[in-house]
Length: 151
Image (cartoon, rainbow, N blue to C red; front, side):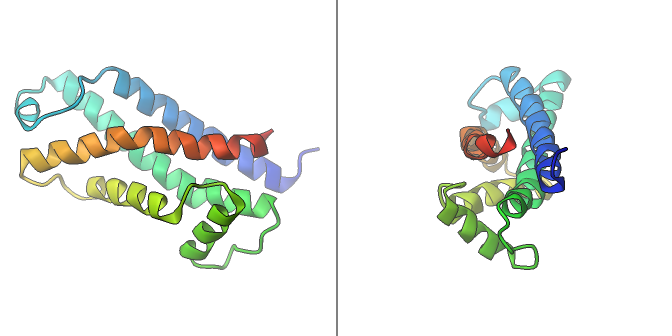
């Protein structure tokens, strides 16, 4: 029988894998890098592909932070459930499950750009989208560090 903490980790992992799969599928449909002039001439299908990418980037980053990281700490019997997120991140960094807290904060900043309405400046929108595209390997790298725990 699987321990409850292992089950919770596996559920969080599967959710992250699903978001990553759909994010990469959307990414495969896009012409990169995006420019301000591309934004104003996108077809409806391209807009949908970017929307899917942004949605899955946001969901993946959220799932890693809110579900996967806590599940890792619980599985490792680290008493961090009631601690602030920064303490959890520092502990995960110390344990080697993330490169750095600063790196995570950058991923979060990118995610936050999409949590609000797009700015009216197409150049800034394009820069945000390109930042997110460049951050995908970092998100994948975080998952790879955790993969051995999933079993």
